[in-house]
Each structure stands twice: as C-alpha cells, then as structure tokens.
Image (cartoon, rainbow, N blue to C red):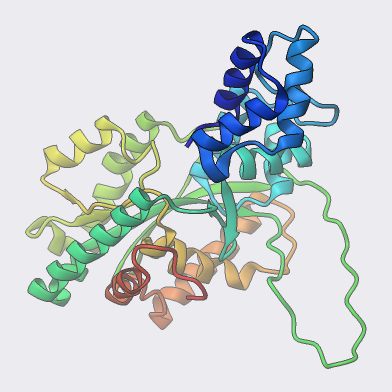
Length: 346
C-alpha cells in the first residue's frame, strides 16, 4: 500500500522525466492496484507540477480545521479522565470550536460513540488480539480459582459528577408530541471523584479538590493515604490476602511510580488492555448505576452534587446492585465470542 503523499511524490518525479498524465496513471495502477489515485486526481497533480508546484503535501483548504498537537493532546487528556464527555463539554473545557473537537475525535483519534463513551472507531487487529488474549487468560484463571479470584479484585476509576446529567431517553405514546429540547447553558459546577469498589459494594468515594489535577503524584498519594486506610477499616481480609487491582490503561494508572507502589505492597495488578471499557466494571456497571438517579436533576452547588452521589452510593450498597465484578466472566466470554471486538448492545 502506498499513501497518497507517496503517490504524489512519484508523480512529481515522473513529471520531471517528462511523462504524460496517462503514463503516470498507468504507472500508478501497475504499482498500487486498486489503491492508485484516480485519473482525474493524477491529471490535476500533473498539471500543478508542470506549472511549477514544488510542495507534495496537500494544501490547507478554506474551512478545514487547523489542529495543533497541543489541541489533540488536550482532548486526549480529557478523554483519559472521563470518556463520557460530550462534544460540547470537550469544546468548553479546551476552548476549541465544536467542529474542531469533532474533527479531532474522528480524524486524529479515530473514535466513535458506543454506550455513551468515546472509543476507537475501529480497533486494530493488535488491539482486538490484546482484548481477546486478556479475556482468555482471565477466564482460564477464573475457571481454575473460581469466585475466590473475583472476590480479590478491587476496581477503581475517576469520573466527573456534574450539575446536570441529561436523561438518556424517555417513554412516549405513539403520536404524542415530541418533547422540546432546550440547549443547556455551560456550567462549571462539577466535581471529579475517584470510585473504588469490589464484589461487596463501594469501598470509597474520594473527592478531588477543585483546580487539582489528578497527576501521578496525586494518584499515588490517594492510594497510600486514602485507599489503604479504607481497606484496613472496611475490608480487613485484604490484609492477609492482598487485593488484585483492576484499573484501565490510562497513562496515569500505567505510570511506573504507581506500579512501584503496588509492587512494594505486594498487590497484584490485573492486566487491562487499552480501549477496553467492556472489560472495566466501573465503565459498564458502577458509574452508569450511580449516575442514573442523578439524571434529569439540576444541582446548583458541588455539595448538592456530592450529597446526591453519596445517596446513590448508599442505595447501591444497600441493594447490592453493583455486581460488575461478578459479571466479568460473562464479559470475558462475550469478548472471546466476538473475537476481541467491542460488545455491542451489552
């Protein structure tokens, strides 16, 4: 396979040798097959080079989003912290135009929406293989160790709790009038929380201070001064039988300092492949259940948001509905069935 720019460069060389448009097009077809540039495109480039053009890069067209590496990184960093961001929220947080954010998501990051989260538009064969291999290894271990393996797992993740979580859908009678959609004004009333839970429910909800970036240093401090004391108090059995940590592959979680901390404590980290929300209980189970009671309600202050989240956590623990870790074997089986691709509709 030859890229467009490689073909343009070849056309430039052939023009310097005096080749015609038809000769250039025939040469490309012989070398590139079906991926060869169409005749009209070859003709346009031959004409441009014969008229003195030197640059083989595509010219920037009017209206085309101008995107820098810093802007792509800013969007990527926000998605690393919470893949449930809407395009409007990403635009507000980064100061970019709505169309620029959409361009970054689709053209630069190759992402799409699935189950209200941004994921790669098409997993590469390597990414599918990593998901498949992880699911197979975890399922084999589960078959050897049984439920005791699942009960050692502690999973954690960060998410934004916002002043308003829109309803995902509403029931209507056939023929009933469509509900008007009112544009929501941007609000900075939100708070990031770190959630930790196991098979017995939510262990800890940690509130990240406003204006505080969850850096590697901050995350390590949270693990040492918040998570470990919570386990000593609420899950004392982990003192004799160390937990297995399940977290996604965000750069923050995969940092060497974090790995060194877990190694020093003798805690195992369960491998989690990149771009795998289907294998993260926080993504497919806990966070959606905690946010469901908050949908459609406007909160004016951060304390109101935290009170609502705390009520939702207490309800979840009382009813025992957060069973994502116990459902992991089913998700591993689904991933194997789908050959490592995303689980649609689950």
